[in-house]
Length: 418
DNA sequence: TGACGTCAAGATCCG
DNA sequence: CGGATCTTGACGTCA
Image (tube, rainbow, N blue to C red; front, side):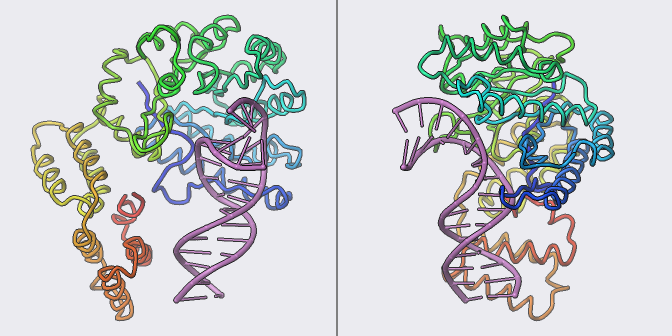
């Protein structure tokens, strides 16, 4: 079982994907942005490799305006060496990658210009994966598109346009149920007819369900037969509802107990799970350590090092409970550990606790800090105490200090990003 | 015509 | 002037 995340790695330095607006998309700017984005992708791959993450969705923003005439570069040729080098790292790390054009790539539009652009966009995505030299189990995930008041006709148009796609695109294309129009039953019908693998998305199904009130496990089992050997292991998308937002919105983090129950319900190991969640790689690491059978106490302690100041800031009682839990060296309490972390993240911290955590962090450089820096920190803490400055401003100051004094331990901390 | 979703770029504000 | 914060852009469909 591989578990992964989509597009960006939070808290990993210099891994952002850069873009630009159309009017600035000249060859020089695009060349600079692509060079940066490929370098960032390489860093993400290395991070994934270090953290045993073997499933990753590459951002469609990798090549800005990659499928648009606005981009006149021969980016495939210009960056052939970089693509090939990153591809090598992906294969060496045993990572399976994918791409996922968004809701605006609509292959079944009745407007020829739009469906044509969609096809070009798919060609772009396939070219990225081809350039990386990854095999056809590295997929492009697509939604069927719009309904246009006539689903039958819209599906026919999808089928026609699908058959016209170049073979390298069709070899990689897989289809996913969406949250409004085409449910998993529709998808299974299309997938079986066109011999296209189907990705099951549980949250989309909860908003736009297939018939019969069938379980997730049922639909996952139905989808399995749409995956051939060449397509690689069956893939599914997994996400949880954000309780504070409208139905279909992704949760800020994966609630581990719920995830473990879901995995138990599937009862299979021969499946790849792509998480769609706000905290991205953080939840991926969590789920891997809890569900893959590959975690150890050493990794939990590494995780604790990253979460601890955030936990201290929100909930000192959870901080103490986790320390007690991790002192039991004879077992591997991963799920309990993350449940305590989740509890702390949902706890509204007091101002006093925030100051206490900030003082702990300040301890890393209070002896090296200049007089000016000491004054600035004390002033910021005082201003926060009087309600004149948000805690975020105090933390930004601490982050700057951590960067200046190269406190590696702190720079890896989620204290600054959660 | 605006909402939808997503992210960063771009624009503007502020001390 | 630099940094923080607000707005726009890019995409297509549908109410």
